[in-house]
Image (cartoon, rainbow, N blue to C red; front, side, top):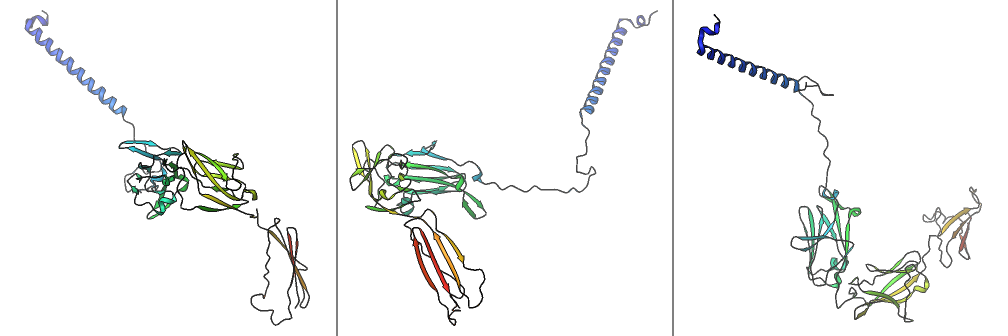
Length: 353
């Protein structure tokens, strides 16, 4: 008789249940074993690092030197505060109506501000400069046309308490304050004397308060308008007129005239005085009659200086015993003869002992 028939239907049910539990247990055991194998395979073996000992023990710690950083290393730029929470990055020039407030921000810690000379000398408490954590603020209230000029922000490089301006990283903006009553920046001088140097450009600083004003240059006598061709004489709205290569005919009394709408005004008069500066110092050449003389013999030394025409040249002599009086007990004599031939000057001296 088969074994299953001995237990009947209930015995078969119990046996089937037992087999089912055995299969489930076996599957769970195999799954756990496979998971452990995957975990062990996924771990990487610890490899000894180059330059370090693999045994545990005291290790030498090397600290890298700290690089000192400053806020000036970031790019510095200027922004204008238009109103609360509204800013704009400024360009080369800006215009603010006279009477309004100028407020500029410059990123950096710390920064130094440069303002027109008029404000440096006397600002009447209208100028306020504040340094914040990451930026500096310049505020100018009750502005006038006289405040027209260049405003500069210099980032500062500091080491402990020693700070210096970083001129190569400075940012600047030229601010115009148009004034309906003043086309030129006011000046207390009626005449201003300016030297015309042959080797240096000359600027006539007739500064206008509005970039929209039309400016011309005039001569007082004879009363004519001076031609501005952009080469010999040029105009810059931020500087005025520049005479690039002054000549004697540029000398005299000149002034500027500005016009805007129905308003026309004249500037301070500039008295230009021409000075013939040499392009280079005279080149002296000294020669001696001989390089060695015996006691009692004569020695002749000549000095020739070549310079530009119409430029006076003065020659002075220095020789041994001149200041110490060593020649007083000798029969010494010094004779000088000056010879001028155009731009050449020669001085000959003889002395005997």
